[in-house]
Image 1: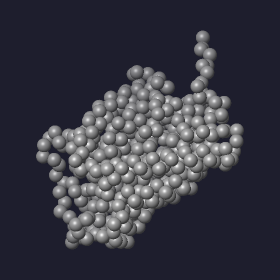
Image 2: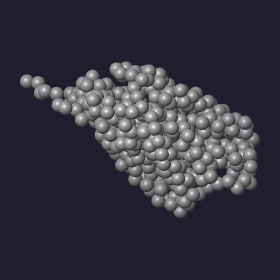
Image 3: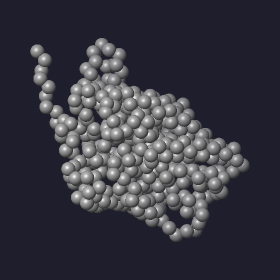
Length: 438
């Protein structure tokens, strides 16, 4: 005899009284809006870190890792969309990662901090080029970025970012093509740096570097807000998310491979954690036309505002669940004033942390190993097996189990390797430093 349906902790009636869900995660989007959001969440300026990740693995392993990570994350996000569709058809529309497994606020806050830090670094790069002996420090540029982010943070809902995220998609293609062209120009110029593709001499060091690089690539592919993005779609969401994923991964195919190949070809194991800094070395002339680099930096800077806004939505949704009154309008004084105060304080916190801890290269690896590998490479397969219960003799069950086992090991090794690099680089860290440590 079939069991009667159990009451769901996150029923539609409960969601309707949740101001965070109603206001921040309003469900009005089309599939292409999901594509815009997904592209902004994944295809960001962190792709400029790919040549830096390659230097720990070399050409062969680097491209293999990039391809495997891309295939597994697409499969992972596809499974997650199926799980969310299944829940919706059963009358339970899960709209947050923490309803499915765990709270991902810390991961998304880390991405928000990184976006502000990179945006500040972009301003610093432009300033250094225009005024080589200028007195402004990195933390001052971070403060400028934080001020702009405070204004933009008042956009009320995730859905309201759809036009901004379309612009973000265009910008990601724009600066990728500019950087690829700049790297090719740098590699062919008379001032081209000596290219060395050799790996570290000690086998143990090579192993640790490889796992750190894998963690960085995992962080680049990572997406900590997939359920929140799917929640912005007008129900029923079935099939819409898959179309959005296809759009997103078409952009990934173009941008990730071209950026990693051109950057690593031009600079080898001297690649910086921000390839723009490799193109504009401190001890020599610019290796590409200033106009090209300047335009790329502007595109990166503009897209970082979109990325910071996208990854802040989880925090905003949590805040408004507690502070807003769903029975009053989104723009009523009762809801507008708390939103203004809380979002401003959150952005100031992210800006302060970015200024105080400018260690992006190392932190990126730690976030990838501890945060994105479990969230994007393990959790969706586990949830799919639990939800659909495929036969233990089926191919899907064993593929999912294999991915879970392999990436659990990769995550453990990546976390150890990334923490090891943090310890080794500890002597370079200075609070409120004007240089980003690689």
